[in-house]
Length: 311
Image (cartoon, rainbow, N blue to C red; front, side, top):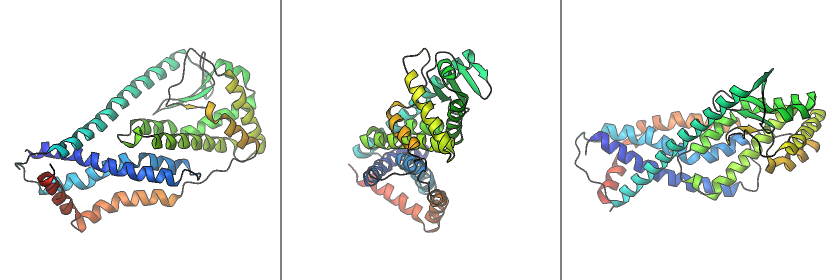
Protein backbone atom coordinates (compact mmCIF):
# COMPACT_ATOMS: atom_id res chain seq x y z
CA UNK A 1 0.00 0.00 0.00
CA UNK A 2 1.51 3.31 -1.00
CA UNK A 3 2.44 5.71 1.77
CA UNK A 4 0.03 8.45 0.69
CA UNK A 5 -2.91 6.03 0.58
CA UNK A 6 -2.10 4.41 3.91
CA UNK A 7 -1.67 7.85 5.51
CA UNK A 8 -5.14 8.89 4.43
CA UNK A 9 -6.86 5.63 5.32
CA UNK A 10 -5.18 5.10 8.67
CA UNK A 11 -5.55 8.80 9.44
CA UNK A 12 -9.31 8.43 8.96
CA UNK A 13 -9.30 5.37 11.22
CA UNK A 14 -7.44 7.19 13.98
CA UNK A 15 -9.69 10.22 13.53
CA UNK A 16 -12.77 8.04 14.09
CA UNK A 17 -11.27 6.17 17.05
CA UNK A 18 -10.12 9.30 18.90
CA UNK A 19 -13.43 10.97 18.03
CA UNK A 20 -15.35 8.22 19.79
CA UNK A 21 -13.01 8.48 22.78
CA UNK A 22 -13.39 12.27 22.84
CA UNK A 23 -17.16 11.87 22.65
CA UNK A 24 -17.12 9.67 25.75
CA UNK A 25 -15.09 12.32 27.59
CA UNK A 26 -17.39 15.12 26.44
CA UNK A 27 -20.48 13.18 27.57
CA UNK A 28 -18.92 12.65 30.98
CA UNK A 29 -18.06 16.34 31.28
CA UNK A 30 -21.58 17.34 30.24
CA UNK A 31 -23.08 15.12 32.94
CA UNK A 32 -20.62 16.34 35.57
CA UNK A 33 -21.39 20.01 34.89
CA UNK A 34 -25.12 19.75 34.14
CA UNK A 35 -26.15 21.25 37.49
CA UNK A 36 -23.54 24.01 37.52
CA UNK A 37 -23.35 27.19 35.52
CA UNK A 38 -20.32 27.48 33.27
CA UNK A 39 -19.06 30.31 31.09
CA UNK A 40 -19.74 30.31 27.37
CA UNK A 41 -16.05 29.70 26.67
CA UNK A 42 -15.89 26.57 28.81
CA UNK A 43 -19.10 25.20 27.28
CA UNK A 44 -17.76 25.84 23.77
CA UNK A 45 -14.52 24.02 24.59
CA UNK A 46 -16.50 21.04 25.88
CA UNK A 47 -18.70 20.97 22.78
CA UNK A 48 -15.76 21.08 20.34
CA UNK A 49 -13.55 18.71 22.35
CA UNK A 50 -14.09 15.50 20.29
CA UNK A 51 -13.47 17.15 16.93
CA UNK A 52 -10.49 19.13 18.21
CA UNK A 53 -8.95 16.08 19.91
CA UNK A 54 -9.31 13.97 16.76
CA UNK A 55 -7.84 16.59 14.46
CA UNK A 56 -4.98 17.27 16.88
CA UNK A 57 -4.05 13.61 17.33
CA UNK A 58 -4.04 12.84 13.61
CA UNK A 59 -2.23 16.02 12.53
CA UNK A 60 0.26 16.35 15.38
CA UNK A 61 0.98 12.73 16.34
CA UNK A 62 -0.13 10.07 13.88
CA UNK A 63 0.72 11.63 10.50
CA UNK A 64 4.26 12.81 11.38
CA UNK A 65 5.07 9.40 12.88
CA UNK A 66 3.55 7.48 9.99
CA UNK A 67 5.34 9.53 7.36
CA UNK A 68 8.66 9.09 9.12
CA UNK A 69 8.57 5.42 10.05
CA UNK A 70 6.32 3.73 7.47
CA UNK A 71 8.08 2.35 4.39
CA UNK A 72 6.99 4.02 1.17
CA UNK A 73 5.90 0.72 -0.42
CA UNK A 74 4.71 -1.26 2.62
CA UNK A 75 2.56 -4.25 1.69
CA UNK A 76 -0.34 -4.18 4.17
CA UNK A 77 -4.02 -4.97 4.05
CA UNK A 78 -6.71 -3.55 6.31
CA UNK A 79 -9.30 -5.69 8.04
CA UNK A 80 -12.98 -5.19 8.76
CA UNK A 81 -12.44 -3.36 12.05
CA UNK A 82 -10.15 -0.74 10.56
CA UNK A 83 -12.35 -0.56 7.48
CA UNK A 84 -15.30 0.30 9.71
CA UNK A 85 -13.31 3.04 11.44
CA UNK A 86 -12.14 4.39 8.09
CA UNK A 87 -15.74 4.53 6.87
CA UNK A 88 -16.81 6.34 10.04
CA UNK A 89 -13.99 8.85 9.71
CA UNK A 90 -14.87 9.47 6.07
CA UNK A 91 -18.55 9.98 6.95
CA UNK A 92 -17.74 12.41 9.77
CA UNK A 93 -15.42 14.57 7.67
CA UNK A 94 -17.57 14.36 4.54
CA UNK A 95 -20.67 15.30 6.50
CA UNK A 96 -18.83 18.26 8.00
CA UNK A 97 -17.63 19.51 4.60
CA UNK A 98 -21.07 19.20 3.02
CA UNK A 99 -22.73 20.93 5.95
CA UNK A 100 -20.20 23.78 5.83
CA UNK A 101 -20.78 24.26 2.09
CA UNK A 102 -24.55 24.31 2.55
CA UNK A 103 -24.39 26.73 5.48
CA UNK A 104 -22.03 29.10 3.71
CA UNK A 105 -24.14 29.10 0.55
CA UNK A 106 -27.29 29.91 2.54
CA UNK A 107 -25.54 32.53 4.64
CA UNK A 108 -24.05 34.31 1.62
CA UNK A 109 -27.41 34.27 -0.13
CA UNK A 110 -29.22 35.76 2.87
CA UNK A 111 -26.48 38.31 3.46
CA UNK A 112 -26.57 39.41 -0.21
CA UNK A 113 -30.35 39.70 -0.12
CA UNK A 114 -30.42 41.80 3.05
CA UNK A 115 -27.63 44.03 1.72
CA UNK A 116 -29.63 44.56 -1.45
CA UNK A 117 -32.93 45.46 0.21
CA UNK A 118 -31.59 47.08 3.38
CA UNK A 119 -31.39 50.81 4.10
CA UNK A 120 -28.39 52.13 6.09
CA UNK A 121 -29.30 53.71 9.44
CA UNK A 122 -25.99 54.73 10.92
CA UNK A 123 -24.28 51.64 12.31
CA UNK A 124 -27.20 49.37 11.40
CA UNK A 125 -29.08 48.25 8.32
CA UNK A 126 -32.87 48.54 8.26
CA UNK A 127 -34.48 45.59 6.49
CA UNK A 128 -38.19 45.60 5.82
CA UNK A 129 -39.75 42.24 6.61
CA UNK A 130 -37.07 41.17 9.11
CA UNK A 131 -38.44 40.31 12.57
CA UNK A 132 -36.59 42.08 15.38
CA UNK A 133 -32.83 42.65 15.48
CA UNK A 134 -30.09 40.31 14.30
CA UNK A 135 -26.35 40.11 13.75
CA UNK A 136 -26.12 38.72 10.20
CA UNK A 137 -23.18 36.95 8.64
CA UNK A 138 -20.39 34.66 9.76
CA UNK A 139 -17.14 36.34 8.74
CA UNK A 140 -18.16 39.99 8.30
CA UNK A 141 -21.36 40.28 10.35
CA UNK A 142 -23.66 43.30 10.12
CA UNK A 143 -26.39 44.44 12.49
CA UNK A 144 -29.84 44.24 10.91
CA UNK A 145 -33.07 45.62 12.30
CA UNK A 146 -36.58 45.13 11.01
CA UNK A 147 -38.66 48.19 10.14
CA UNK A 148 -41.29 47.26 12.73
CA UNK A 149 -38.70 46.95 15.50
CA UNK A 150 -37.09 50.24 14.49
CA UNK A 151 -40.46 52.00 14.75
CA UNK A 152 -41.32 50.31 18.06
CA UNK A 153 -38.10 50.80 20.03
CA UNK A 154 -37.26 54.07 21.78
CA UNK A 155 -33.80 55.60 21.16
CA UNK A 156 -32.59 54.21 24.50
CA UNK A 157 -33.92 50.74 23.71
CA UNK A 158 -32.41 50.83 20.24
CA UNK A 159 -29.05 51.83 21.70
CA UNK A 160 -28.97 48.95 24.16
CA UNK A 161 -30.19 46.49 21.49
CA UNK A 162 -27.33 47.57 19.20
CA UNK A 163 -24.89 47.24 22.11
CA UNK A 164 -26.14 43.69 22.64
CA UNK A 165 -25.46 42.75 19.00
CA UNK A 166 -22.09 44.50 19.07
CA UNK A 167 -21.16 42.26 21.99
CA UNK A 168 -22.04 39.23 19.88
CA UNK A 169 -19.86 40.58 17.07
CA UNK A 170 -16.87 41.15 19.36
CA UNK A 171 -17.22 37.62 20.72
CA UNK A 172 -17.40 36.11 17.19
CA UNK A 173 -20.54 34.21 18.25
CA UNK A 174 -21.80 33.66 14.69
CA UNK A 175 -18.47 32.09 13.74
CA UNK A 176 -18.61 29.90 16.85
CA UNK A 177 -22.07 28.69 15.80
CA UNK A 178 -20.56 27.82 12.43
CA UNK A 179 -17.84 25.75 14.13
CA UNK A 180 -20.42 23.94 16.24
CA UNK A 181 -22.67 23.23 13.27
CA UNK A 182 -19.81 21.86 11.16
CA UNK A 183 -17.83 20.01 13.84
CA UNK A 184 -16.90 16.56 12.47
CA UNK A 185 -17.83 14.45 15.47
CA UNK A 186 -20.00 11.64 16.77
CA UNK A 187 -20.83 13.80 19.77
CA UNK A 188 -22.99 16.14 17.69
CA UNK A 189 -25.42 13.27 17.05
CA UNK A 190 -26.15 12.77 20.76
CA UNK A 191 -28.64 14.53 23.08
CA UNK A 192 -25.75 15.55 25.36
CA UNK A 193 -24.39 17.78 22.59
CA UNK A 194 -27.81 19.42 22.15
CA UNK A 195 -27.91 20.17 25.86
CA UNK A 196 -24.42 21.70 25.75
CA UNK A 197 -25.35 23.81 22.75
CA UNK A 198 -28.49 25.08 24.51
CA UNK A 199 -26.44 25.99 27.59
CA UNK A 200 -23.84 27.72 25.42
CA UNK A 201 -26.58 29.67 23.60
CA UNK A 202 -28.06 30.81 26.91
CA UNK A 203 -24.67 31.94 28.22
CA UNK A 204 -23.80 33.84 25.05
CA UNK A 205 -27.08 35.76 25.28
CA UNK A 206 -26.56 36.53 28.97
CA UNK A 207 -22.97 37.54 28.22
CA UNK A 208 -24.12 39.92 25.48
CA UNK A 209 -26.79 41.32 27.83
CA UNK A 210 -24.16 41.93 30.50
CA UNK A 211 -21.87 43.76 28.06
CA UNK A 212 -24.78 45.84 26.73
CA UNK A 213 -25.86 46.82 30.25
CA UNK A 214 -22.37 47.46 31.59
CA UNK A 215 -23.50 47.16 35.20
CA UNK A 216 -26.04 50.00 34.84
CA UNK A 217 -29.38 49.07 36.42
CA UNK A 218 -31.29 51.56 34.30
CA UNK A 219 -29.90 50.13 31.08
CA UNK A 220 -30.85 46.67 32.33
CA UNK A 221 -34.49 47.75 32.66
CA UNK A 222 -34.37 49.37 29.22
CA UNK A 223 -32.92 46.18 27.71
CA UNK A 224 -35.64 44.08 29.34
CA UNK A 225 -38.25 46.41 27.86
CA UNK A 226 -36.67 46.15 24.41
CA UNK A 227 -36.65 42.35 24.63
CA UNK A 228 -40.37 42.23 25.46
CA UNK A 229 -41.22 44.64 22.64
CA UNK A 230 -39.25 42.69 20.04
CA UNK A 231 -40.75 39.42 21.30
CA UNK A 232 -44.24 40.79 20.63
CA UNK A 233 -43.22 41.54 17.05
CA UNK A 234 -42.05 37.99 16.38
CA UNK A 235 -44.24 36.44 13.71
CA UNK A 236 -43.84 34.87 10.24
CA UNK A 237 -41.88 37.35 8.14
CA UNK A 238 -40.68 37.84 4.59
CA UNK A 239 -37.04 37.42 5.67
CA UNK A 240 -36.17 34.99 8.43
CA UNK A 241 -32.68 35.04 9.98
CA UNK A 242 -30.25 32.21 9.46
CA UNK A 243 -29.88 29.82 12.44
CA UNK A 244 -26.25 30.96 12.65
CA UNK A 245 -27.14 34.63 13.09
CA UNK A 246 -27.23 36.05 16.59
CA UNK A 247 -30.81 37.05 17.29
CA UNK A 248 -31.68 39.75 19.81
CA UNK A 249 -34.84 37.88 20.75
CA UNK A 250 -34.59 34.16 21.50
CA UNK A 251 -38.03 32.95 22.52
CA UNK A 252 -36.85 30.10 24.74
CA UNK A 253 -34.60 32.44 26.74
CA UNK A 254 -36.90 35.47 27.01
CA UNK A 255 -38.23 34.84 30.51
CA UNK A 256 -34.82 33.95 31.95
CA UNK A 257 -33.13 36.99 30.45
CA UNK A 258 -35.85 39.42 31.53
CA UNK A 259 -35.85 38.03 35.08
CA UNK A 260 -32.07 38.38 35.32
CA UNK A 261 -32.09 41.90 33.94
CA UNK A 262 -34.93 43.12 36.17
CA UNK A 263 -33.40 41.36 39.17
CA UNK A 264 -29.98 42.89 38.57
CA UNK A 265 -28.37 39.50 37.82
CA UNK A 266 -26.09 40.58 35.01
CA UNK A 267 -22.81 39.14 36.29
CA UNK A 268 -21.38 36.13 34.49
CA UNK A 269 -19.03 33.27 35.37
CA UNK A 270 -15.71 34.20 33.84
CA UNK A 271 -13.88 31.98 31.44
CA UNK A 272 -10.71 31.21 33.30
CA UNK A 273 -7.70 32.47 31.41
CA UNK A 274 -5.81 29.45 32.74
CA UNK A 275 -8.06 27.16 30.68
CA UNK A 276 -7.12 28.78 27.38
CA UNK A 277 -3.47 29.08 28.38
CA UNK A 278 -3.48 25.36 29.13
CA UNK A 279 -5.07 24.52 25.78
CA UNK A 280 -2.57 26.69 23.90
CA UNK A 281 0.36 25.27 25.85
CA UNK A 282 -0.81 21.70 25.25
CA UNK A 283 -1.07 22.31 21.51
CA UNK A 284 2.61 23.24 21.50
CA UNK A 285 4.15 21.06 24.19
CA UNK A 286 2.39 17.74 23.54
CA UNK A 287 3.78 17.25 20.00
CA UNK A 288 7.20 18.48 21.13
CA UNK A 289 7.21 16.14 24.12
CA UNK A 290 5.98 13.27 21.96
CA UNK A 291 8.96 13.60 19.66
CA UNK A 292 11.41 14.21 22.50
CA UNK A 293 10.22 11.09 24.37
CA UNK A 294 9.85 9.07 21.16
CA UNK A 295 6.11 8.71 21.73
CA UNK A 296 5.63 9.15 18.01
CA UNK A 297 7.38 5.83 17.40
CA UNK A 298 5.09 4.22 19.97
CA UNK A 299 2.10 5.59 18.04
CA UNK A 300 3.53 4.03 14.91
CA UNK A 301 4.01 0.67 16.68
CA UNK A 302 0.43 0.74 17.95
CA UNK A 303 -0.78 1.49 14.44
CA UNK A 304 1.21 -1.43 13.05
CA UNK A 305 -0.18 -3.73 15.75
CA UNK A 306 -3.73 -2.69 14.94
CA UNK A 307 -3.19 -3.31 11.24
CA UNK A 308 -1.67 -6.72 11.97
CA UNK A 309 -3.98 -8.11 14.64
CA UNK A 310 -7.39 -6.52 14.20
CA UNK A 311 -9.80 -8.68 12.19
